[in-house]
Amino acid sequence: MSPAIIRQVKLLELRTRRLVNSVFTGEYRSVFKGQGIEFAEVREYLPGDEVRTIDWNVTARMGRPFVKRYIEERELTILLAVDISGSERFGTATRFKVDVASELAVLLAMSAVRNNDRVGAVLFTDRIELVVPPRKGRRHAMRVIRELLAPAAARTGTDLAGALAYLTRLLTHRTIVFVMSDFQASGFDRSLSLLGQRHDVIAVSVEDPGERLLPDVGLVRFADPETGAVVDVDTSAPAVRAFYARRAAEERVARQQLFRQLAIDEIVVGTDSGVVDPLLKFFRRRETRARRRTA
Image (cartoon, rainbow, N blue to C red; front, side, top):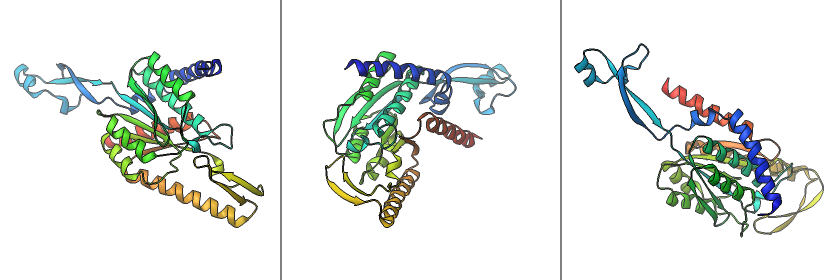
């Protein structure tokens, strides 16, 4: 790795560590519960204990109520699946979409390390470019961060359906999977559904303002970052800009409907804004929903 990338890794780790310690402490842990519970002990009933925790066998023997106490099995596995195809190396604001995805992935990786969870990464284009198997520890997390900050993509195309199918084959135990992409692909519905049936999948949609509205800058030559195809567009024509905005909105609505249909949460991040607020909103939305289910 170049000295510039090493410096970037260290600076981002310091910034992320502060955020994790001061902002995300408790949020991550309260949202991502352990995969089960482990019996700890039996103790005498106290006012406020739930009736369903009463151990009736011990209660009958002792002649007074006792309850079972459990501890949560905290160990989780977090997998960061990041699209590094050509369309992710695009941005009209302050940075590229892949940079935004990487920053969010680093925050999640550091949060996982703080909670002693396993974390891994899969980088993909129209093929799987890199796999870092989930493991624990800061040293391993730093390797994940280095790979996220300096992705070496050999291809520019996107095969989102193939990447999702690969994850379904790769992951043998229940995993929390963050899929980070602009989702500018088709035919991935079934693969996403199958992955979501076995794992807790969160879609991270990475957007750029230039993908929502076409600026009025006259005649412009656009190049497809994945195929290299070139097209000339007269952006000064109101009908062209209106058609572009309508199609972009339709695609966004269709994507949101798919996620709702598959019961997959979505985090929307943009190249023109930070990643902290969207992630915090996601944590709090999930926590609120969990409280309502148990109320």
